Length: 206
Image (cartoon, rainbow, N blue to C red; front, side, top):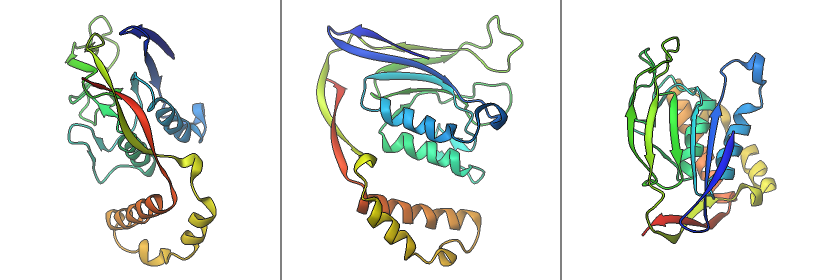
């Protein structure tokens, strides 16, 4: 669900809510890519995105991942960081001791402030808590620039050739953590080599 409001004259602020169910019987197998496509699409806009994305293994408080993180959750985390998006919730939002699942994202770090845990309120049957925050949309903004990878212009043929030359047996030998770090290193090098970087206009606080 999404909508938009006008602020600071003609500046548009897009506000969205997203829930990703963990049941593949409901959503199928393509939803992970769709979530990342959504993130890439809104990253060029002035936005706030609220939601429960159900990606475990991500430590949003320290902006890192633990050893239990799945590949799909890692891809989501990397997507958020590559798009220079800020996540604002740094406390547990459920009764159970597990990673933060209810998240608040924004394109500008200072747009969201005063994030609070309001408890369950009238929703006592839920194990999730209510989150309160303020949106600072009255402050002046100035046009700035930031860079992001433009996957629409990726050199696919060169990427495929490079991938075919990699000794995957050597890359994927060892512990899970060791394999992941080597695999990630390969992907990041290929990304820098074959994916152009675009400069996009963004709104930053002045």
